[in-house]
Image 1: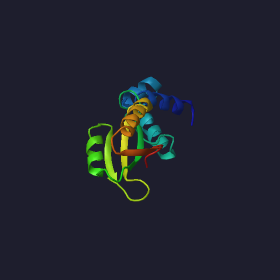
Image 2: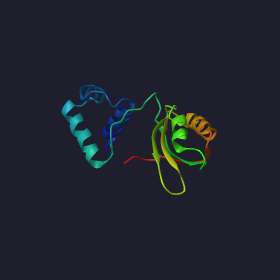
Image 3: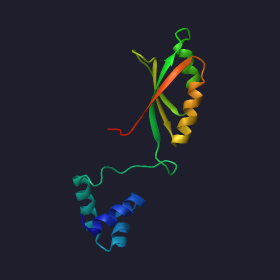
Image 4: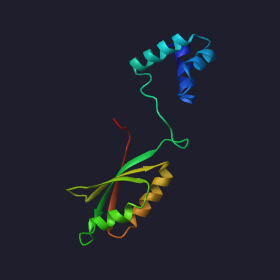
Length: 136
């Protein structure tokens, strides 16, 4: 990887939607050369994917496991929690935990607020959060 590749990656990190023509102009190389370099960087793994950052920050995702009171219907707990826009999916599961939820927040601070709200929901005994590090 040469200096031009490094500069190309820097420009793409700033704005991956830039046209190849704009990138070529900034790098003072031809558009075809930009296209070929991007393809080579993709094949080598230097560029793994082009993505969207929402709200200027990456999303914070976690799987949250719930242990619920046996005397409380799981459906009523899920109904209460489903009002929270950060909770994307509910799964009733077997084993030590009763419910698994996919939670997506703009920041870890917001996630902490959501967890506090979940923990104070009637019928929730305890929670465990599994922070998503990578989605394959």
